Image (tube, rainbow, N blue to C red; front, side):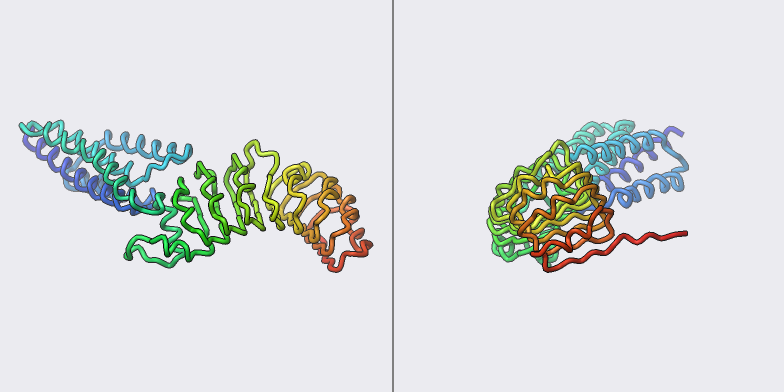
Length: 356
C-alpha cells in the first residue's frame, strides 16, 4: 500500500510540474488567456487524478481557492500579475508538495530546482521585454492590432509606431498598467481609452505633440492634470467616468470641443476653466444648473441629449451661439432658443412619453 502511495505522489508531482512549466512558458511569451479558461487545465488534472489515481485531493482545492482569491484581489488593486503566472505558481507548489512526500534521496535537490523556476521566469520575462519599445504587453497587443501587425511578425519598430494616427486602448479583462513607450507614437492624433483606472501614470500622453483628440470612457479618474499639457489638443470627451476628487478640468488654449457623457453634475464647475471652447456636448447627464454657461463667450454650438437640466435661462445670453441641438431632454423654456437672432440651426426633439 505504501509503495502504491509513493507511486501516486510521483505521478502527481510530474503531472503538476508539466502543467506548471507550460503555464510559466505562456507567461514568458505574454500569451494571455482569460482566467476561467485558465482553470480548465487544473480541472483536467484534478479529474484525471480521480479517474487514474482514484482520489480527490482537498489540499489542492483549498490552495486553488487561495490562488483565485489572490488573483482577483490583485485585479482590484491593479497589480499587474498575469493569471498564467499565478496559476503556474499554484501548479508548481502542488508539485513541490508531492515532491516533499517522496522518499527519494534527491527529492530536496528536485524541489530546489522547482523553487528556482519562478524567479528565473520573472527575470526572464523582464529580460525579454527590456528591449521592447512598448513595455506593457497588453498595450503592445492593442498597438499591433491598430497597426495590423501580426504576432508572428517581428517586434514593432519606431518607424511603424510613427505611422499610427489613431489608437484605442481597452483595459477590461486584460488590463493595461503602463503607458511607457507611447511617446514613440509621434504622429498620433486620436487616443481613446476605456476603463482607465488600472493605468497609474497618464503623463506619457503629454509627450504626444500631435494629439488632437482624447476620449476617456468608464472607470475611475484620480488626476486630469495631464490634459492641460497636451498642447495640440482640440477635442476632449469624458464619458461615464467616476471622478475621484476631481473638481475641475484645465485644458490647453487650443481646446475647442468638449463632450461630457453619463455624469451627474451640480453645475458647470467641472469645465468652468475651459471658457475658450466653441462646442459643448452633454449626453445622459443630470445637471442642476447651467448658470455659468454665460461665461463661455466663444461658444458656438450646444448639444444636449437625454439630460435633465433645471435651468438653461443664461444660455440666451450667449451672443456667439449659432447652433443648438436638444434631444430627449427635460429642460424648461427650451423654446427660448428660437428667439435668439444669431442662432442659425435649431434642432429640438422632445422626449417621447410612452403610455401603457
